[in-house]
Structure formats: structure tokens, C-alpha cells
Amino acid sequence: MLLQQAQVTVVVIGYDDAAHVADAVRSALAQGPVVHEVIAVDDCSTDGSGDLLEELAAAEPRLRVVRRRTNSGGCGTPRNDGLDAATAPYVMFLDSDDVLPPGAVTALLDAAVEDDAPVAAGLCVRRELPSGRETPWQPEVYARRALVTHPARRERLVHDTLCVNKLYRTTFLRDHGIRFPEGRFPYEDFVFVARVLAAGPRVALVPDPVYVWQVRRSAARLSLSLDRSDIANWQARIQADRLSYDILLGAGEKRLARATRTRFLDHSLRMYARELDLRGAHYRREWWGLTRAYLRCFDEGDFTPAPAPGRVVARVILAAEEPRDLGRIKEMAARPARLNPPYARAGDGTPVWSADLPQVELEHLLVRPVHLLPAAVDAELRPRARGTVLRLRLHELYGRMAEAGPEAVEVEFVERDDGRVGLACTVPLTAGPGSEHWAAEVPLDLAALGSGTWDVRLRLLFQDGSRRETTAHAVAGAGLLRRRALPSTRHGVLLVQPYATHAGALALRLAPGWRGFTEVVRRRLRRLLH
Image 1: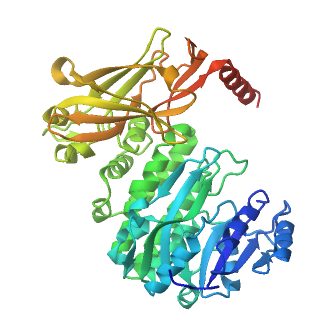
Image 2: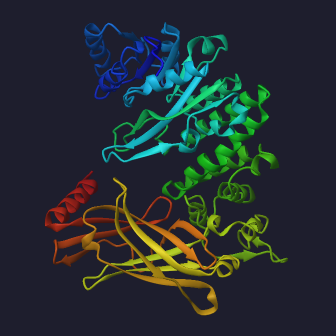
């Protein structure tokens, strides 16, 4: 380890977040003597956050507090204030509701100094609260220690739009005039990162977790990026994406600019498309129109590098003037993607999205490897007192399933919060009449799973040795997704709630025992009264 002392300014920004800002500041100070100063910028809070920070600063000489006289409405302006006030050779940014894990600053600084890199970046971990489940953000970028001598040599850097999991040489930012958009600009990170990459720095990558992004979806006030229910959020995202493209293209970085288009198709478009059926008709019409207008700016070369699911969703939106096929779009936008029937063909036999939209061709499905095909499996969970059965049906897909020879399916029930596998089994797939589908039945002991939320994950096994990881489409007919209370010798009673996720996949909530049953009923009544 390089002994670099007092080299870093950590800028912490916050607004009306007295419940969390002290934890953020303490996590920065706890990085040790490598941190020269922590600058806490309070964006004119009304909940006492500023006074709390002043109290902390009175006992900690490394903490300085900057109190804005007016609220900026976003994250960019307070970050710029902190950058202007920074006095250390390096700077990094921290939001008031997140934390830095131990050793984060040292890991980034060591890499930056060793590689003489103006930018060092590490792994960010998304932590869902209150469950504590952690998911790495863009893990493929940070799989190993590396030095990228120019961003164009690692286009995947464009996909990491976060500014907070990175350490910057302060003079690099100032010399290139790299700042955040001012005021209310929900996706200011997109633009800032584009400006950083456009300057062409050497970038040191470390596999260490250097930032914990704490996601509180049940918070009274969602973060600007998580609050996607208003069409203004989608407008802001498109604006940030468009500006990122223009910045990189203007810097002569055409490959990096094109990578922003890939990012939009594979990430933003798929994420919002999965949620369309949660929105009202007015939102859907506005979203569809905005998206079509933006996609018309893309050329053919922008579509080609993107993974197939995002390309297909984009083609459908461009081909249809009004929102349509939202159920199929949602499933195609899922991860992994699923293409539900019907499976139409054009007059020359080319696979197409539907008979109504034959211009959306799916000829890539005829040549894609089986493990990448959007295989569709329907799932019916039938909870019964005498034994629960999960029925699965794999659909044919333009002859590709039969070609590979479906043999069996591995089924796992994975607890959503902690990732443990509560039940796993392998059952054979049996061809139906005409080989248009293959079916399997899985007997289940739901009482053995216990309480929690369980995702159903599948692995299709084929005779040619191929495997396809997927999830199952939740069939909703005939009351299949109705809540049931089952007698249980183990728990007395077991409350079973099959449901479809935002992406249409089958999942399951279980509440064993009378206490669990009562708690579920109480929460439901509270929601109804609210």
C-alpha cells in the first residue's frame, strides 16, 4: 500500500436528511488520515440538518460545513460548491443517505497514484433497505485491477453513470472545467461522467467496493432518480442521455458517444418499459411519444451494438404510433428477456414481432445461440392443502427449441432479501401435442420455505448441452394469483400469495403461522384505510 496521507477531500451533500447525513459524514471521516477534509454542503435544509452538521464540525477539525442560503433543487449545485471549496489534491463525492465502506478512499488513492491516473474508480454496491440485500453495480467493469489508458479503450465505462464511486484529481477537474449541471437536473451524474470521459483521462480501476448506494424505496421522499412515476423523470433522463451523447461526440469520441445509445437501449429503455403497465393511459401516451421522438435521432449504427431485447423494444415503439403490446414489451424488456407468443412470420417466413407489425423483424432469433434466446415459460402455481403444484410450459420459438431438444428444467426458489435457495429440484420436460410446447410439473412443499418473498428461477437444459437461465411468466387467469390460506401441520396456517413482478415473472410471498397471517391482514387493512 502506498502511504498517501491527507490527500483527499470528500464532499458530502444533503438536503433535509438529518436522519442519515451524520452516518455519511462519519463514514468519510472513518477512512482515516488519508482524508484531508470532509466538506458537508447543506442545501438549505429545513429539518435541522445544518445545525447537526455544525455540531459535528465543532468536535471534528477535518469537517467543514457549507450552508447554502437557497435550495438548489438538485444535486449538481451543492457538489459544485464542494468542489470549489476543496483544498486537497483529490476529491470524491458522497450523498447524505449513502456511506463509504472501510478502506474505500485508500484503495482509490493508491490506484490513482500508482498509475498516475487523474481518475480512479471502484465497485459500487446497491444496498436495498431495510432488507440489506446487496447488488453490485456494473460489476463487469470492476472485475479486476486495471489501468485504462484512454476511455475509448473501455467503452463499457460509459455504462457506469455514477460519479460517486470515483476519485478525481482536483486539478484535472478544474483545468478541464468539468462541473455538474446546476439546479434541478435529476441525472446530473450522466452529464458529469460524460464530461470526465470526454477529457480522455487515464482511469485506474479497482475491484474493491468503494461506495454503498443505499436504496430506500419506502422512504417518504424518494430520491430524484428513483421517483419514476412522473413523466418529467423520463424527460430528464432523455435530456441527460442526449447531452451526454453530444458532449462525447463534440469531443471527437464517436465510439463513446455511440456507447451512450447502447446504454439507453439496454438499460434505460428496458427499465422504464417494464413499468409501463403500472402507469396511467396519459403517462403511457406521453412516454411513447417522447421515446419515439428520441429514437428517431438514432442511426442504424446506434442500434447494431445494443443487445437484442432493447433493440426489439425500440423497433416496436418506432413502428407503432400509439402504445401497444405492453404485456409482450414488458416481458421482452425483462432480465432475462422473454418473448411470449404469438410467434408470427412474414410472407417470406421471416420471424416478425406480430402480424400487425411485420416491419419489426426478428430474424436474429434464427441464428442466436440457444443460451441467449428469449425463451418463454408460462408458470401456474396451484396452492392446495393436499399438495401444491407448479406447472411449467415452455413454448416453441420458431423451431429453435425443438432444434436444441428441451430435456429438463432446474427450478429454484430464491429468497429475495438474502439470496438463499430455499428449494431446488430438476424435473423432466415432456413434449406436448405437435411439439409446440414442453411441460413439467413440480410438486412443492411450501411450508418448508418459510416466510419471505421468493423468486422463481429456471434453468432450461437441452439435449445439445445448451442451458438457458430464465424466469417464468406468471399466468394470471382463473384466480391463479389469488391469496390463499392453507392449513399446515408445521405452522397451523400458511398464507400464500403468488404474484407477478413488474417484469411479469412469477414470485411468491409466504407468511406462516397465525401471527404471520394476522400481520398480513393488518398491513392490508392499513393500506386500504390509507
